[in-house]
Length: 81
Length: 141
Image 1 (cartoon, each protein chain N blue to C red):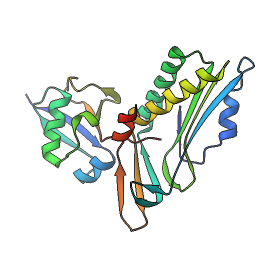
Image 2: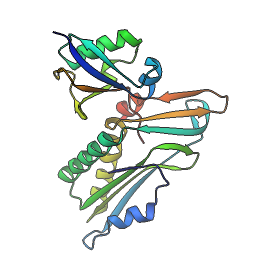
Image 3: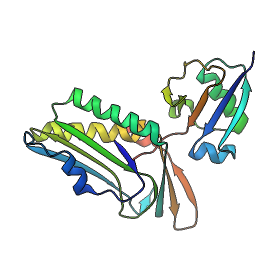
Image 4: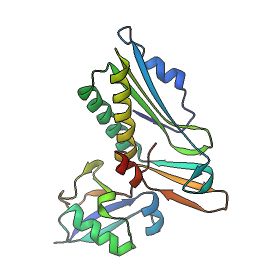
């Protein structure tokens, strides 16, 4: 069964995707698989290991489960300070 | 940990850490410099996802309090458009002695740079602009 996921893009990813956010239908189960799907969808070249993901406003690991109705924040490599 | 869009008032930040048991206050100021990787930089823009930046920043400060013998710590980070020379981030740590204050301050700023959802866009003299990533920061950690 396909899940409906809201994806919000930040900084470089927002510019590459050309959108702030979108709702996608997907069959992926993990954050890592979702990243891979979005990487091909929007030609995001940044290595997964340098990026971060948050699910429903909580930072998550790449093996975290993606559930129907989740809001996923996709963070490109950070550069605070 | 606070993210603000106005100038950082360092004197006020330091006052938050005043403690009669403290013999040291170690402070770090990150400034906007006019060059990076061979480019002449005119301005910087920080994009911040505040909810997670502040909660993760608080977590880093708690980690520092657990790992080092310090009294308190505080951090402020800017968002928005900054000019050359502006203070982009301030970290302060109070402790009975200086060594623990220095070590904890370094721990906090190193983790602020690599863990918080903060992105930096540089605007160059030649009209270009670009997002800076923090691979070098991660390598230095």
